[in-house]
Amino acid sequence: MASFQQTDEGVSTTFDAVVVGAGFSGLYMLHRLREAGFTVQVYEAGEGVGGVWYWNRYPGARCDSESIYYNYMFSEELYREWTWSSRFPEQPEILSYLNFVADRFDLRRDIRFQTRVVSACFDEENSRWQIGTDDGATVSATYLITAVGCLSTANVPTFKGLERFQGRWYHTGNWPHEKVDFRGKRVGVVGTGSSGIQSIPVIAEEASHLTVFQRTPQYSAPAQNHLLEEEDIREAKERFHETKQKMRESPTGFPRERSDRSALEVTEEERRRVYEAAWEKGGLILSSTFKDLTISAEANETVCEFIRGKIKETVRDVKVAEMLLPSYYFATKRPVLDTHYFETYNRDNVSLVDVRKEPIVEITPKGIRTAETEFELDILVFATGYEAMTGSLLKLNISGRGGVTLREKWEDGARPKTYLGLATAGFPNLFMITGPESPSVLSNMPVSIEQHVEWIGDCIEYLREHGLDRIEAKEEAEEAWSRHCWEVADSTLFTKAQSWYTGANIHDKPVGFPIYLGGVGHYRNICTEIAEKGYEGFALQ
Ligand code: N01
Image (cartoon, rainbow, N blue to C red; front, side, top):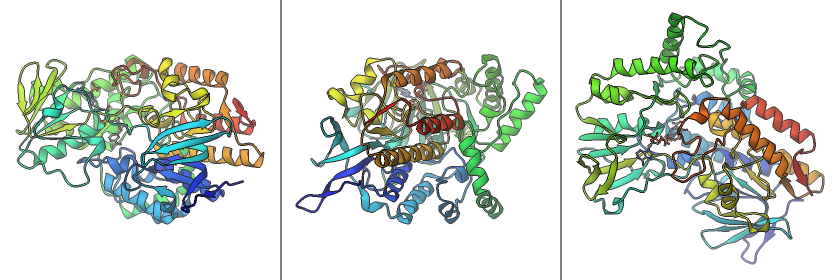
């Protein structure tokens, strides 16, 4: 039965479910549970819906997944009603889409904006979560569902002296709503991941001078973005069912075919032809051109060499080109797409600093001091990434059975152990959308989000139908899943890199690989089978 109580002031404090976050995950979770007759309260720290697409407003921010695949597929009507303008949508358009969805399904009435969840304690006697928010309120819910995103806790490096900097500084993941004016300004960008590489060419157009502080050179390929033709849009809408099925069954959540050839079984000319074609087509397809690029170091080196060749062809200054050449295994850090990134280093107003050779020593009132020199800057942009996968979950201060916190549980071991990335032992009635050890960031996110939301929705309905109100992952099931997740990852090159995938980007963070690499379709089948077996591996009461 749906539980719902009113306080004296008429404000409800008891819900079937509390959902944290109103981005892609939280919006659909709210809709799914409400349709099934449950009472839901969503808390969102921002003033509006959108999650990462609400906060990431930095210049050049756009999605690296193609728009026609980067949307909800749970409703054909919704899919038909919305029309994307370009192949890779810009942040404002994605935010408009999520606002459209919120209006379309009347979601805002159950979202409390500008309210941050600051604690969640499991009350064992009543099998309920007590959830505290930063406005001092406490509410109670049978289920706590985190929809906090995998990349939402900004990593601002603890450079000495930042507080003395006399200019302004920003992190790309927490960008102001008003435009930042770079005209006539000396700007420093620290970081060359996706956010840095998207923003650098745009900032360079405006700034009087841009200095890029690079720690690791990146393999980046051109997005080859373009406006969508009417014909593309019509075709996409007509293929809704076929595309949806392909995406759900695929390894990565995209409807594209994967190669069954090794990069080493073809001639050098053939390999070059394949890589050139992928380069021209643009997008994230380079990594799926051959089946063994993320498994075999030798195969991987062929694509690395191809991209290094492109960088050398593009960047005119030989010394700068040399500094931009990456050496890690391609795709073991998140592949990056760009629009004129390497070309930007041909501009007179752009310079590059290699902070591995010349480390940043401190931020001074006037700029950045490296081991060799001081760079005078008016604006600093930290494109330094996130405490990925676990950062936003840990910030919620969740404590489960026996008062053990999620932080204690996960920092104790070498990795954040979960069962399917959906639940974790010791934390009954807690569900995590795209949690650690699910396909999440190595898949097309909306596809993985929908799968989790639907699985959680079905599970909560099942519990209601069977008169149960408590579910918890068993330790042995979690142990087996976590081991499996690691073994799959460790059979690839992914665990051999220093990346935010492994946690190596955050000082002191335990290094692991909290992403399931077995494939989106395969993972879906595992989750479905577990549910069909009466939620095997979970204890139900
Ligand atoms: O962050 P990152 P991001 N001193 O962690 C450097 C998604 N995303 O915000 O590589 C100097 O990738 C760090 O260096 P290194 C996407 O999944 C998607 O760019 O650790 N440098 C690196 O160069 C993406 O992968 C989209 O050696 C320091 C950079 O900062 C993820 O979000 C757009 C440093 C951080 O790169 C994160 O991308 C944007 C220090 N102390 C983001 N600390 C789209 O789809 C860190 N760095 C559009």
